[in-house]
Amino acid sequence: MADTNDAAAAGDMRAVLQRGYGGPEVLEYGRAARPVPGRGRVLLRVAAAGVDRGTWHLMAGRPYAVRAALGPRRPRDPATGLDVAGTVVAVGPGVTDRRVGDEVFGTARGSFAEYAVTRADRIAAKPARLGFEEAAVLAVSGLTALQGLRTAGRLRSGQRVMITGASGGVGTYAVQLAKVFGAEVTAVCGPAKAELVRSLGADRVLDYTREDVTAVDSRYDLVLDLAGSLPVARLRRVLTPRGTLVVAGGEDDGNWLGLHRQFRALVTSPFTRQRLTALVSLQNRAGLEELAELVAAGSVTPSIGAVFPLERAAEALELLVSGGARGKIALTV
Image (cartoon, rainbow, N blue to C red; front, side):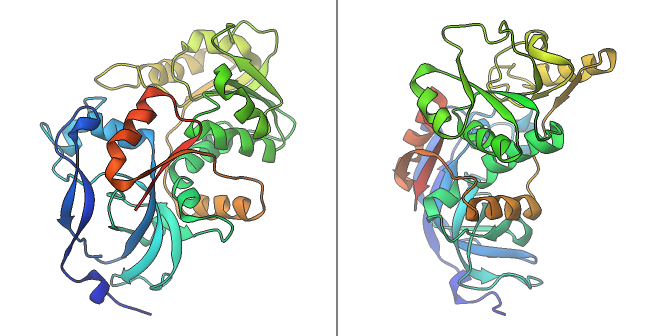
């Protein structure tokens, strides 16, 4: 077992830093102090990082409630990024299940940098069949899709599921996982990305630009709403009488809390036979290891639509916000 060593010695590193709240212009590429792992934590040499919606929310400081925790005018900690893949270069006291040289993936606050520290239980062994870029986009979106379908959605084999936002970072995993779990999948996306979601296993694709997807004749046991734009009342139209709606998206749902649709689902649920709930995704090693097993078996494959070098992180966030990405976006470090 290696302990904190020369790899964690004082020094600096290249990093993307957040100097305020707003658009990608608040991100600055420069130098920062290299972090040192404390008890229960490991230091990673970052090979690649994933770009996810959570990182955008922290950059924008929206909903505004997040600023109460991060800092009212600017983040107290300027480090940014969460999804990560890399190599363990040092371990802190109390870490017994990770060694220097392990190739891992998972989450690490401040992953848009050459080095990042994370809890040992927030990473898992990188699947051998994945490169670092693919592994770096697996954790956040993969866990969200897994928990949205099975934990919140209680999906069972043979059920029918509709997934809105199916071509996005979470959606591309949700389509694959729903097929793994034995569901019949209807994917909702724009016309430019229809072939992508078909290639991931969708049985039916609905083009939201040409039809009202809540007016179709089909009824679903589960609707996983990742797009975040349709009212709860309309989504209920396509549910079976005892179907489940999981509200996960809500990018335009107010600047203050951003949870209006989630609250609407939760307060309505007790008064209907349908089950209406919201998704809260949790980072945990068990989920990461399950995703790694599915990847190793060839059942799930990350879909990367764009790759940027670290110094172009702002451009990567711009692409994410524009909705132009097909699947996930990765940064190489």
